[in-house]
Length: 104
Image (cartoon, rainbow, N blue to C red; front, top):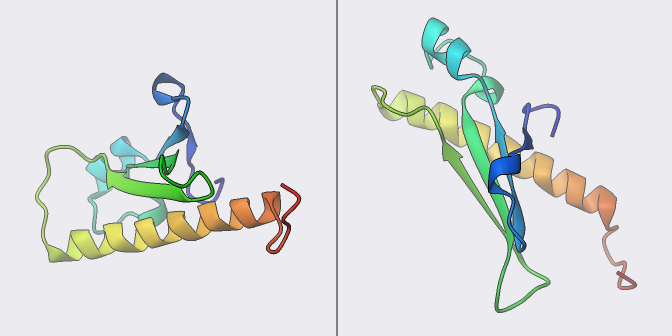
């Protein structure tokens, strides 16, 4: 989670998942969303267990920029950030539980 600067959000940790927050609200406001690397856009990721199937995880990535002018270009930047966060989470999970390992 280092690449996207995501850190656990201790205020929002629940029994069935974890919440991560990252990015820089200050950097995004000072430089503008168009000039900030997508990995620095303010975002929040929530990883939760699926209640119906505990072997399944649900990942939701949301922007936390607040009030801002949102156009298609900024949305595309957030889509890139969300895709990168998803890949980072999947990578961490694959390192924790190797694919095909049924002993866990």
